[in-house]
Image 1 (cartoon, helix red, strand yellow):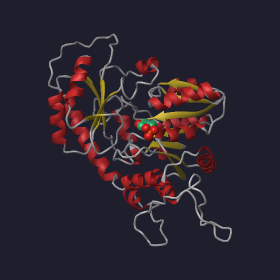
Image 2: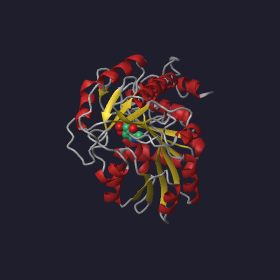
Image 3: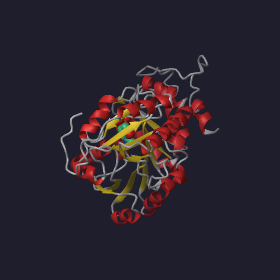
Image 4: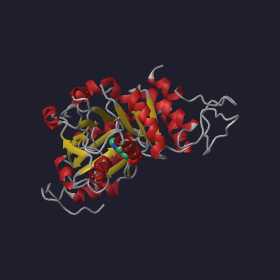
Length: 393
Ligand SMILES: *Cc1c(COP(=O)(O)O)cnc(C)c1O
């Protein structure tokens, strides 16, 4: 089966009692034993048929051996960190998701995990950061919010030459646009809250592995940590995934239109979209991805006044965190999605107060362009100050 067929059929057929075409919501905590035996399920923390359906579906989409569906993307990341021991060293991309940095910092403090942050575009810097206890490379591409692209194949080769795991957060592109296992990754994490569910009505996560030892460990952790997603949330994500392919196609078409429009707009200083030829890693994105996704970031030509003007003026774009839903969102990285990130790391990652991030939805593109056009109709009054200013969004 090809990916588009798998989105609709993989793992779905679970009802032998009535042959329902759609996986039922098995909203039960426990399962009856008959003559001392179960039918494969005994308690929903350990496993639940609706969750299994979603796990089989996501594992099939990524081409992995097993997936674990958990309550949030952060639960997926936390679960994955339990592959490691105190004293183990992880090399993390310097512009990772803010919540990833926060939990890594917490596990450093609580459990003595060791973490180095490296700009993974610089492969020699990654090689230089490897040391005796290095057990994993934590990769995220495209990055948030500046959409930097790093080379999954080259980074996985570095990881494997030191017996370390290559872990990829594949949230921003989904398996439709990027297949990390085919590029050498060992573990994939997802926030299914985003493109996989696609409808902004659930928070969820998934860990996918393609090695038997990791699959066994993952199953142990699902039961031991108790982070499994609820049957209803699994059912919603399973339903969302059925339209992943047509949604991703329209997200990308619209994102391309928005990025092209912004690039020629006089009140825009810079546009970040891997699909633009002007993007510094456009060639790598073209080789490594099968599309460029629906996220576009830009810097307003001005200061916080202009940023606030845009945020107050948009009508179709909602000012909100998160991404990957059918509706268009706009967010201010410094005061919203990256507010909890260590400010030094944030500055080093190049995220300044002028950066706005769009999750381009699947509305009519003409309406999206008209909305941005009216929101960007300001006269620049502040000319790009270099100092930090107080942010009030
Ligand atoms: C949103 C997100 C997460 C965290 O997922 P939640 O579902 O919000 O817990 C992790 N990684 C990336 C890249 C994300 O965008």
